[in-house]
Length: 331
Image 1 (cartoon, one colour):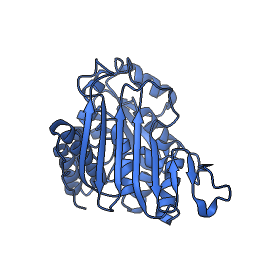
Image 2 (cartoon, rainbow, N blue to C red; image 1 turned 90 degrees about the vertical axis):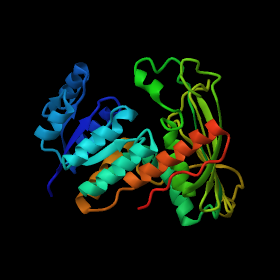
Image 3 (cartoon, one colour; image 1 turned 30 degrees about the vertical axis):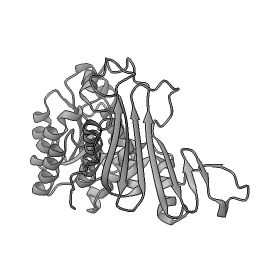
Image 4 (cartoon, rainbow, N blue to C red; image 1 turned 30 degrees about the horizontal axis):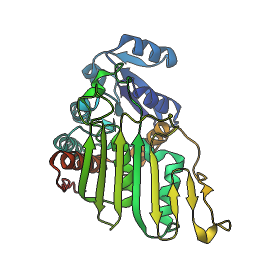
């Protein structure tokens, strides 16, 4: 079977994408691109056979790629993804798909015009413990799910100076997109958002650094997302906390309680049911399989756009003090 020829644009989080392509049996890491020469030198040392580029357009035209990972700052995702699609490449775009609903719509339309696949890097869906929670919901082990909460309360104080573009983000649409995507994945599509936000702990951040959003979901479930950049707490392995409550049982982060199968009638450790694989490598494996088999990726462009729309609805609600209905994206 022919291997996919893969490239990576941006070697920040893109280093994990490069490692994923280098380790899967379905692709060859052929080229990387970054404006930083030191990053390129490190990539060349790690993968001596790759081609390195300072200019994205040159990589697209010269490297004969099948797929490219777009791992640039959020506000660049739209232009970089569309350029790759117009060059005939499939795209794995880091989350969020775009920093606006309008930008997300442009990528969705470009993917349809090009007949190429787009996957969005919502890698939390590939974390073994979180996949296990989703499987428990789908199998009915937790019964009817009535409440889903996904939180990411992080201490980012003083950590953005190395990457100043982070100051251009909205907290919910940046790191918080992981939480919103997980909440949607478990609870279903968003009908309405209502939010509060404040700016009390991270003075250097130019906008609200804490936001809490309630979501009304089409399933009847209620969702809640909290995203904070100035939470003073110890670091976690996976910074996203997930709580799911159903009519037959509950999950709170790393513990589960299902009375029907739990003789002790107490919380038990959540035991992942999937292989322990780094989440970016797992998503790249999935995308390569989809490309080679002609299957729709788990987080395609429309899925990514729906998460962007749900995030933007929360941000708009916090700003206006009113409930907001997110823009709809059809399959």
